[in-house]
Image (cartoon, rainbow, N blue to C red; front, side, top):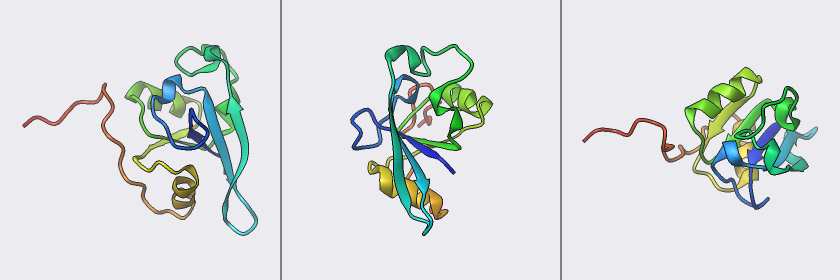
Length: 119
């Protein structure tokens, strides 16, 4: 299983997934631990907000963890076979480890295009 994490600074989980160009890529080692196996640093034209081609470097991911994204991004990733997980967790390895162990991640703040609760 390959898990991507949106990380514009290559240190923490960041939001705005559609505009993200930097990703940490994790997998599971032989002992079941999360290990970083790659980093992507893509040009602006390769952000999912801009990209309109067929093959994209994140297409081989199974899951993408992000701090925030819109419903359109989630649908677009689902069409590519990638499940999106949003979280308020900021540490990439902690989030990937939790995901690999089936532990729920803390919820992310609602995205601007999601309906807000009425009071």
